[in-house]
Length: 64
Image (cartoon, rainbow, N blue to C red; front, side, top):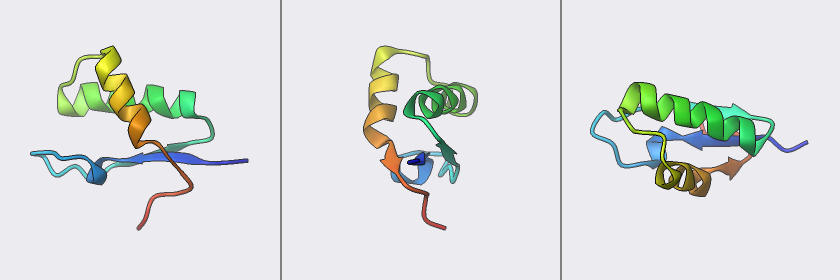
């Protein structure tokens, strides 16, 4: 079974966020990443945000 992740370090950010989130499904990961983006980075839950997060999803595990 594949594991998926998104890593805030790969996105330009004023806050220099170092969070990486992983999950067994892209759908679960997307929901967690949207919640993080809203709570920590102040983003609104929009189709554009979701599309940007989906583009950043990688298979495997984030680098240490």
